[in-house]
Image (cartoon, rainbow, N blue to C red; front, side, top):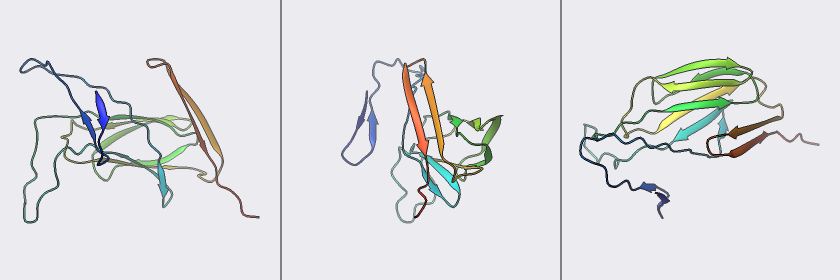
Amino acid sequence: LLEKMQDGCFEMKVGNVPPSETVLITLTYVTQLEVFDGFVNFTLPVSVLPPLAQGEEEEKTMPYELEISVSLIMGANIEDVNSPSHKIKFSDEGQGEGMVLVDTKTTLSTDFLLKIRIFDTKEPIICTEHDSKTNSSTIYLSFYPTPH
């Protein structure tokens, strides 16, 4: 069960897991993307540790790992994809679609940041996507009003 807490963080409780067992949790995350300096910016908040206190040098780690993959459906050709936070592999599938994989399993101590630049960012774009696993659909519309 995933719950949004008052401080804006999410809490997930997983129980009845035998010792040394691996648990696979799939989470679908939908958020508004911001555009800055020509890049569409996506942030996946994965930090589960409190920030380092003043003077602390080593980052604390937890025995949890996270595999991140991002399916891109941009509606316009993708010019550049990069991550200032993690090493990634990008596969351009053409026609504004692609797949991003984080190069290795990551710990839950650093948020995942992804920057995507598409060609013709000021052109109107509309995309639809249907997820057959959850039987849900998403519509994305992007446009820039022109001044009169």
